[in-house]
Image (cartoon, rainbow, N blue to C red; front, side, top):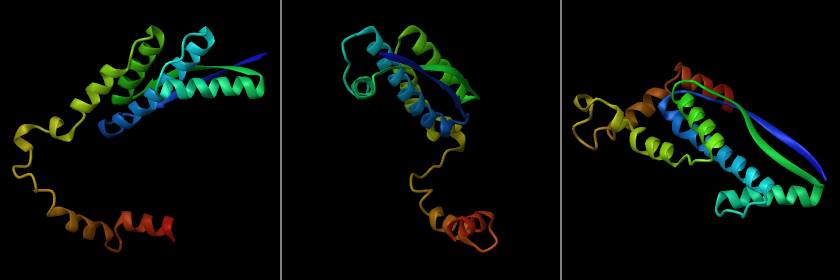
Length: 154
């Protein structure tokens, strides 16, 4: 039986809006790495996404005669992306969960939480009136966004 390692390098961008997205990427990579570790230790299969990754690794072994080991090898990130990679590296090393970071991003990475309370909108429908104006403004001829859209769409 052949064995191979799939070593993965990951770079996570910064910025709060991307932090939640990049956290989703790190969670998937963590679940794949955990399923790979369990597969090679002959540990009992887990449920959920881990079970899907485990089944994929087992199928690769059955159909191709290859025991594939997935190893997140290099991780780097800037700002909020750095937080994601530090938590991912720690979870892979220790076997702990990424759930605390999921909770952090879901509770704290909300614009309403990040904006100074004195700068928040006073009326909950304050943004609704601006949407048609923003659409009109962004679609005007000569606007950088409308030029890019025309070039890529046409």
